[in-house]
Length: 178
Image (cartoon, rainbow, N blue to C red; front, top):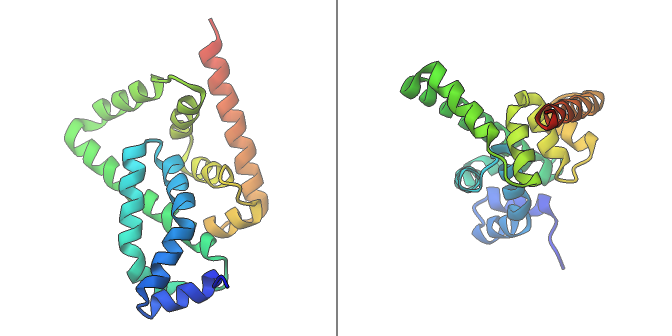
């Protein structure tokens, strides 16, 4: 019989390594997929996902069971991605200066090879709130679940998705113009 996620989380919080392994077995692929969409690059997604997995044993005790475990895990991932972006931005500004950082960001945005690569690059140009909302909903998460993860209303999630789509269409149109 399959143990539900809440029971596994409680057991993992009590130090049960097998329960923690079962959580990772069930949810690693989805967590990695979200990390990939949040970062746009496989190596960064691997690093982010590994960092999250290393921090989870210490964080799992804060899971209260009020939401689905995946909702809680994805909130942890979004927070970790925000932290990583802030750290990378600080380092890039310090290392290269603002002008070089912006030039490098634009050069990276210009490199597209396939539709999926284009989408990941274009998502990188979106404001953080739109990018995170879109990344979550691309993972078959409902608007209600995304709202809970992001701490906003369901209507705000719908509005953000609409704005992200408009921005992506505008980007595509601008690129296709002669």
